[in-house]
Length: 356
Ligand code: IPM
Ligand code: MG
Image (tube, rainbow, N blue to C red; front, side):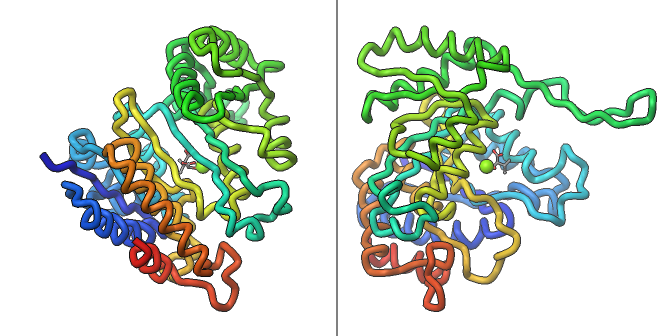
């Protein structure tokens, strides 16, 4: 039976980069004779404009039935005035929560050809290969109560709740250790246990999970130090496991180590390996429609999709090799320092498809 992918281009540069991803997917489907089909659905601001909801029920249903989901980006300044519950970002958060996509894998890998593109010195980043595992369906992103209220004195108060249960911590911990077993067997758990109670519990649970993985070394680091270490000596890390918000922040920083945020793919997985795949960079409203967006994070997200949800490791590797080969050929989008001769979004996509 053929495998079904739901494609959610979303907003901003989402449709542009997803179009390049689909070119590449079409090419690997042919090359590896994969029995894949896909269907596009509405999500984000564009869904809100057309249906009044950022995550229409129909889209959610399609995603529930799919084998994997390819997602572009959501959001844009035109939605800042929409009711908070209906903003495009809420659609993405709801999708993550509804599908139980708690384990977010964000690999920061430096292609050697891009060592010069990073704002950090080549010797600091060359050979970089970090896997950030971000908890994706809990923590302050979802904790209740939340809101903005008006106090009796007329002043307003904004509040959110940061909470984690033991079972939520345990399952993300297991994800991280399972992945570390296939890598260098080192897990660094990032928290703020010197100040926050939830972090104390996080540490305790991670320590107890570690007992089941005697071959893996577990260390702990406070998040402020981790932010510093990521730009100081990033190669010290193998797997980083952390909370939803810390992971959001640290993965943007880690992305820049790889030359550009336009390079970082991600996988968001449920307990059974079904996943949503997306570039981590967002909708970039400032460059929409100019052909400036780098499609490589999306293309590399498709490689992750083939690897983690569709059981096609060989196709995944061939996409990664094709990306490496177009970088060898000198293709650079503007964010990678392409300068005057920068490759446009579609040229980059065509080049990867051709390299396949
Ligand atoms: C990300 C993004 C999202 C997040 C936004 C768009 C809701 O920044 O995937 O990192 O904060 O999780
Ligand atoms: Mg983010």
